[in-house]
Image (cartoon, rainbow over all chains, first blue to last red; front, top):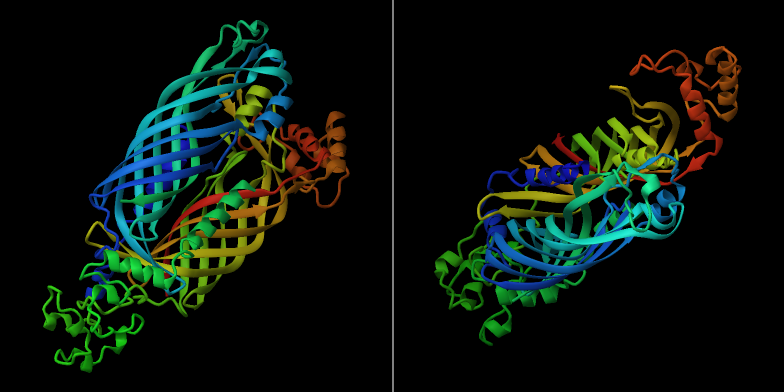
Length: 255
Length: 371
């Protein structure tokens, strides 16, 4: 678990801590005001679309387009399927700074971590939505919302473009970087709000983390790197976990 | 810049959710979903009541339910408008907190009632943990605090500040430096040590939520902004492994900078005097690294020359602001590392002065006391 994962978990845990911090139940007016849900979702299906924008891109950038379908088993729980495709690229930082400015004199060469890019993705998850609230906008318009925590897993297709191993040219002036692709497991965790616009419509805003396995070669012999042996020889394969944290905006239609 | 844009988008999205909701539209959809015990704000329209049914009480005047309205025999009372309700007429007319809450045809603006008023109160906030969440080249963790004076219900003056007790280069910065010898520009990797800012906080939105079907909590959305100053430093030598031991990184102080801050968060009320706060704040500053420990390029060149000829840095002729003693002796964290080695490192950093706009976005977790 790397630092990014820790930060995310800390953030989500901290936000969850606020939930049980309740004042004493007030008078009857206060109880009726929120507890009687205007928008009941129990037993209802829903479909939606989502757009995710990377919040903290370093070497890779993802723009994720998703469609989703869900069934609300209870007011506080739903099962959801999300299928999507992410438009990805290496960032300007990776292309214009790291690749170009690297000093490649050491006999051993190591690739960088977190270079896998998620493209196709599908996850099945559980949405835990125990908080139903109402907020007053500018003292006039009450807007109803749900706060939810989402967790799920699935599969994705990932591709990787090296920042170090060049199969044609030199790393500082490379015509073709070493690339590879694979299918792998995918995990997702989110915390978000769903605002009800009407009985059948809602908009979502959430912070979503996509986690997938990372692997890269370290300490390979630079002299052996060539087109037929793109990652050299003698290197060790390091593994880890990559996190892509996104701001996700979505719409949902509730049947 | 992206972080700032995302923060702005969060603000915009929060506000935008209100835009499609005109009051009449809200009223129509409420009719579709509202059960007899809903609390919502609209009267029953003609479509759901007989044409001869009298118009119920206006939505924004729940307090106008007078004893006259509680007379069931009067045909113009709300009770007469709900003959199909399962709630007995007497129950419908029962006043709860001054309103016939059980009458489905009477609108009650319950969410507008705030249980505790902030107006005129002072608030002391402690954020034991403020964690940077967008650390590309640097990473900060600190403890912050705020003092607010609520001049009005939704407006407060604010003084905020704190100290980052952990500030270091990020794992990404260390990786590209270690593997590829790509050094981050000094201004981009500048580390913020402390900051003091003054500004305002507004609470335009407030609401409440239910946890499952039982407990209730009240909260408000806080938006704050301000300006002030902060101290910064820059890493000179990265953390390195020397044999079996680790030689810690070394740092030099840089300028005190002008800073601005924008934040948004939630304040959950715990009784009359306590709240829990969860905020995201973006502290923006524009560093330009031209001096390190008060020494400019010429000072550092003189000190380097002096050390090269067998002397010590404090024997060099420098400007008055240059703290030469920072480059004398050995490092406090590594007794084998002479501070004079930092001279050439610092000189290289200020040789080509760098500048950047840094968005230090942090998650602030805290609690406050009102008095």
